[in-house]
Length: 84
Image 1: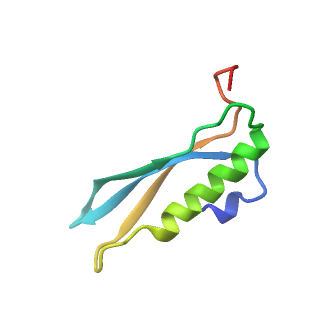
Image 2: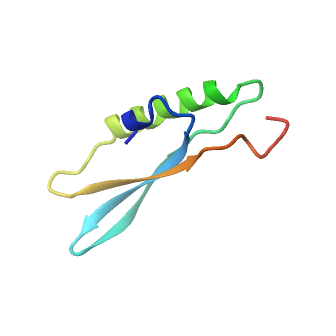
């Protein structure tokens, strides 16, 4: 998913990790988020948010024998805070 957004202007604001438990998924209470920093333009934020998401997913210690799903939160717009 992260690599598919590489050439886009869609930021990954963060995400949650879910674990398959039988026929359903449960929150693992693991998550990450990326916030736009002061002075950072949208393109810089998008690039950094992709890098942070890929790093999190790549390094998450997935439990053996349990399906893991990452639920991403996206934004295609600029920060709603004009000061950021």
